[in-house]
Amino acid sequence: KARESKPRDSRHDNQRRGGPDRHREERPQRGQGGHPGAGQSSEQQLFEALEEVRKAAAALNANPGQGEVQLKPNNSFIRRQQHSLAVEMGFDTESRGEGKERGVVLRMTQA
Image (cartoon, rainbow, N blue to C red; front, side, top):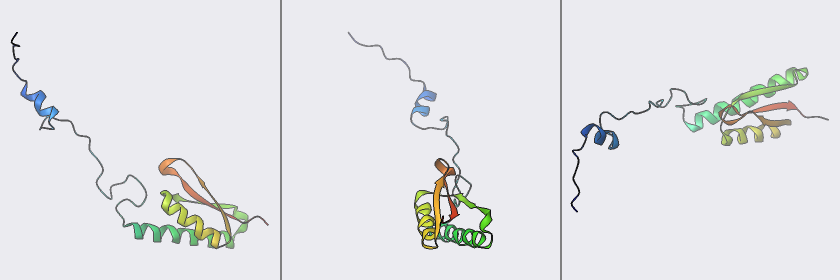
């Protein structure tokens, strides 16, 4: 038996092929948000994150009764660098939060 062909719906074809009628989700461009430091070079992000550790350490040394300082959220690579620097400086650290909201917390080392 021969199959009868149906006329094609060109609008449907355009959608399937990514044509003009296809819905596309808007994505933020670089530097328009998403996570802290978006749009910055990774070196700049790391520099600023380590500077944040130094400032937090200075604040804790100046006021030990403060207890702890929560740093801005960062990705796992930067958090690891922040932990390393803080430990070298004599502080206890931990990460808190979930996903893109995860950040390092500095505390005075318990004697």
